[in-house]
Length: 87
Image (cartoon, rainbow, N blue to C red; front, side, top):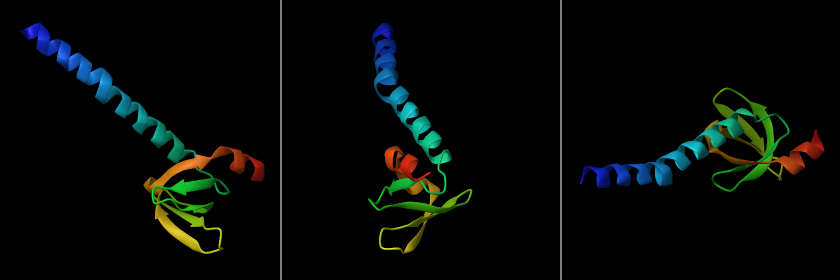
């Protein structure tokens, strides 16, 4: 009976906990690699270019020219192809 509980714990760890930690680590690395001029997408779906960075906040210039302030954790992804072309 103990072997069944150990096996269930191992399956739970390898299917749920480990992949979640890996995704969190990748997200932290992506958010720490932000630079001015990077094209980003927020968790709300806003596409824009990083205009200013701070430790906790980020200012994004939207395509219509307005500047919006977001928490750094609100960034979902960086568009590497477009960001590299601008730099």
